[in-house]
Length: 199
Length: 199
DNA sequence: GCGAAAATTGTGGAAATCCGCAATGGGCCG
DNA sequence: CGGCCCATTGCGGATTTCCACAATTTTCGC
Image (cartoon, rainbow over all chains, first blue to last red; front, side, top):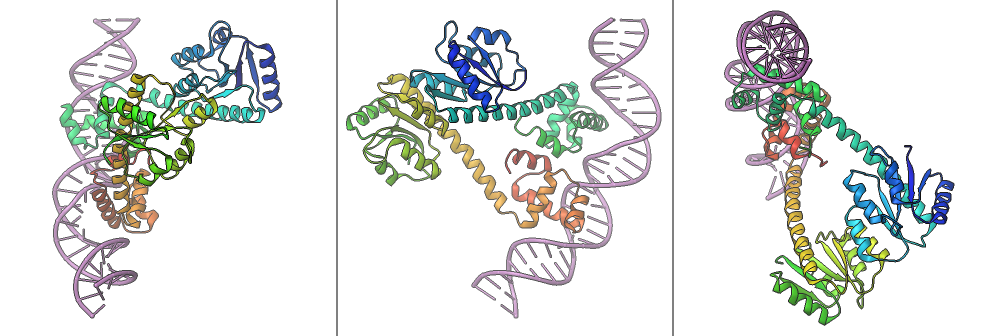
């Protein structure tokens, strides 16, 4: 799934004109005539952004959006709508939609928003990759190593840690060295920064 | 300025009925017949949330919102509007408005949103107080102490720091102890966590 | 029950940290 | 000019960390 704009609209003409517009600006596109068609092809590894019509036969845009959110889809979603509906727009944005634009839209502005959405997605993906690598490293820790890590992050000295865990200082040192190794850090400070905010 | 909902609307009847509704639910209110009246009384120390009408004589709701944002007002803003306008709602929410509701609104839902907004404001205020205390402590550091702190946070050993700053290890130790003291931490790990994300 | 991984502990020495005591020099303010 | 704050440095000892070498016990799945 190469990064692209996923166009979901049951109106062939709109899909085609959108695809033409975006591709003429260098944005790759894929078209889907219904929410169900998109869901059938969607994978968590999908990259890019989504242009989603509100009113469609079968599953509606907001319904698809909810499903995708549940399934962990992080692609930015730009809603497209024919008739203004403030509560719907407000609900969509509060749920995390990237944008909500009314038809007819200004071509240049829409392209700009799509480009921004693609950029956001790329950044989110980088951040997610970091987070994944981090939790993978955390997952590789043994129980003891995790316990020691907690206490290290609490700023406690090895002697105190040994005391609290009822083990010898030497053992703490071993665990400490092993977990530093697994987490890819060289000092407790680096570890603290690596886990800043998380956990 | 005790925590309260600030009602800004040029329609006396709406202000009064809103005030009655909210106060009957235990939410203190203050009313302002225009954006200008509110601005005249507003101070950065104001607490609570804002219920803001879109269309008003003089400065409009969105205009006031922009001004408040510039001046660093962090109170959550709930926009109230008579006629649906999707682009305006989208713009307001993207700029950070707390909510955007159409009249006529559901009384209970609005009260709920106001209560949530007040809660958010209280939390933001706590966070801001922490941030202020932190930057106050950072500000009390001398130039050298700040330099040493940077390198400590980079996970460097005193020996290396002494080398980079071209001073003796003993001096580094002194600065380190002093800055730990000023920042109110006992270890480098605590310092790293205190500054997690910031700076 | 066997073998691998995890948890545990010891010894001992090099290196680093932590701290109190003591002191010098520069810059700024009243 | 004297006092105060900041930056600087040295000495020395108590404490801690870091590691290599070496080894025992526990746990857990096949």
